[in-house]
Image 1 (cartoon, rainbow, N blue to C red):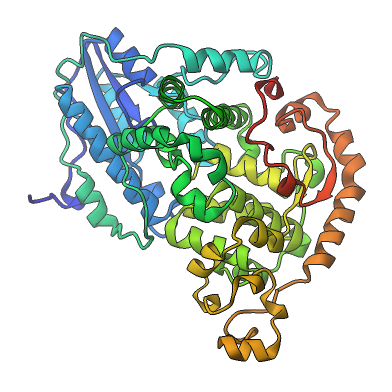
Image 2 (cartoon, rainbow, N blue to C red; image 1 turned 180 degrees about the vertical axis):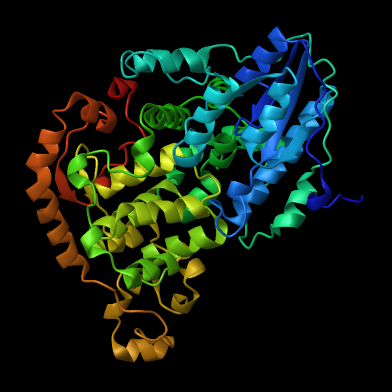
Length: 516
């Protein structure tokens, strides 16, 4: 098949209409259980599905790694097939989304889209689309957009999850007669999308439904597969990229699991779906989560300690702390990391290396295939301790080796230089006696680095720094607006080393009462 070069592709042809609507896809890359699709097909004779490839997300200044872009493209190819099966065509365009949408609006088309919370560029784009073009953003995603979002939030979310999923109206999509020669293949060729990551899942709704079904069949094993990264790779749902791109709705995942599973595994997974909505609600309430510490006492925290060498060592996975290093290399090579290791790396970066949390959060957001702005940035703030609400969680990376990789599977996989080292030395390789280093053929300081900082000293210092700010942080929370933004649950703030290491229920298994 010959693909038209992107440089030769014309803007989409848009016929005039008296009763037509565009469904502008950004996330929500599905047709079923899609509020904007249901609304458009129920109110208009002709419905044109549209996706605009935005140059803002491509090139050297792009916000996503090549592997996430490839995953998106696979989702779009699958979405085109979904529309083909319904007798209509997904139209692709390339350029500034507002300029593309204006062509439709000028021809008499209304534009509908789902109200996907975002920050930075996405928020500005959507605000401009609503103000300048009259784009209608449709809710129906379990979030509250009127009144106090915390009031009866859990009841609101539960009603969304248990309601019947919405479907396109029986009248269908009509005949939109819009056309474009932009293709996924042309975009990939123009921007040279060649992913370097390995073991990345295939994008699209078909893959999402298959993964959901297979996970539900083995959900009884889920509770024991969460913390250890080697077990989590196969034992967790791995549905997060599909939820992030909306190949599958949280609504659908909830109903499938509750209809086909029971027991603790189901309860734990369902609680995570509620947390997904909860953190997304936080970004909908306040887009500043991506750039500013929610508690003003911690604005600019650690900026005076910024050390580019420490940041680089953390990013490369060369800190001398094997569990951190294995996790960071896994992230860079695969775009995946289980929740506990994400939390550990964030805690280590912020508390132990004393680096500004936004640098680490942006690094994760770039590399993660499932990078969701709501979840990534709220979790980073929580793990970095800059909310002023939650327990100070200083993960001990040495203890994490002993607890969550006791046989060395994960460390040995991602740190090949330590493969000759027996498991009993993997928590602190810097303490391996010289004669054993010679026996193993591993020289610490040459083959693998010594720790870049003194963990015990840094942990004590972090605890003291945060304790000194505790009163001020609590005082800031007396402001009702700051309190509302920062309060992720009813858990109080405390301080303890490895508090999450002994609290496997926080925050994953918190009951719904914590959301009020």
